[in-house]
Length: 139
Image (cartoon, rainbow, N blue to C red; front, side):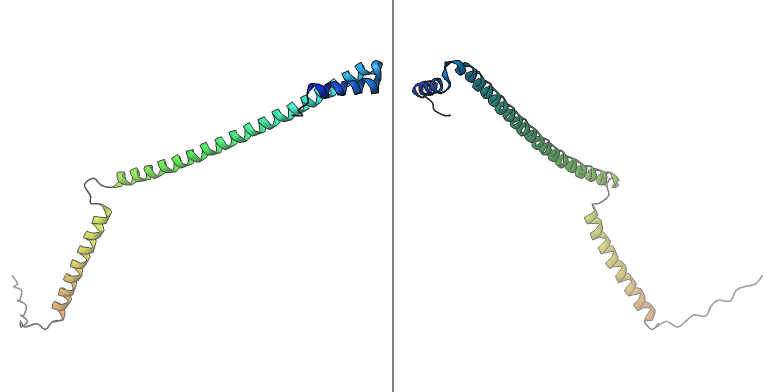
């Protein structure tokens, strides 16, 4: 990370010995070691927290994907259930709804034709003379 070699460490130790002196150098080394340990511990805590948050976020995404898949499966099952229920309510052997609609249309046109014939027969002048009603016999 810092790319510090042996010569740089030796130069730093020599400057510390000259500046601090032999009496204060061990105390300063202990203090520097303590601060380095604290910095590493703090860095490790931050790193662990980030990893935990990332794992939680990945878990959350996984749960959301699973929930979406379950909803899709639920919708599919509901559609299949509705189809099965629709098939169960039909009478066995009955024609499909489309065929029934065609048959209804044919029957309606046939009835309309018969009605038109009946109306024509009622309004047409009669060629037969009316027959008088027969007298009822009394006993």
